Length: 95
Image (cartoon, rainbow, N blue to C red; front, side, top):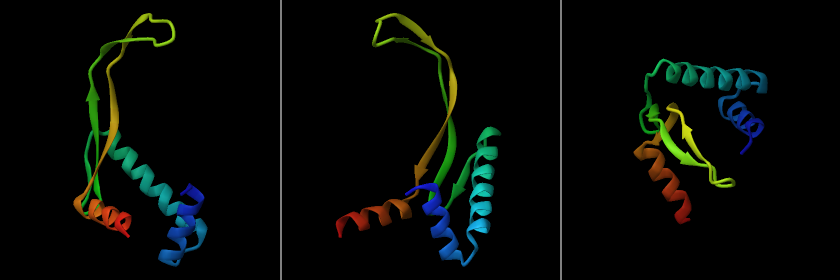
């Protein structure tokens, strides 16, 4: 599904215009991003949890040249699906 298709689905499901649905989606994405930037968790019961994970600096190797490199420490976003979402996805695949 593309972003445009998601906006159309939201608009139809919530009986909104596509413009309003796009604003709502943009607002949601900004809220999630701001929450993660602060280092907080965002839990949506039944859907999942957005959080961040710290990755330590480590040594690596360039696969093309074989040259040793240092990969710097970083913070990455993480999503863990909730039980209800997992159950719904598993039910859909069985059909």
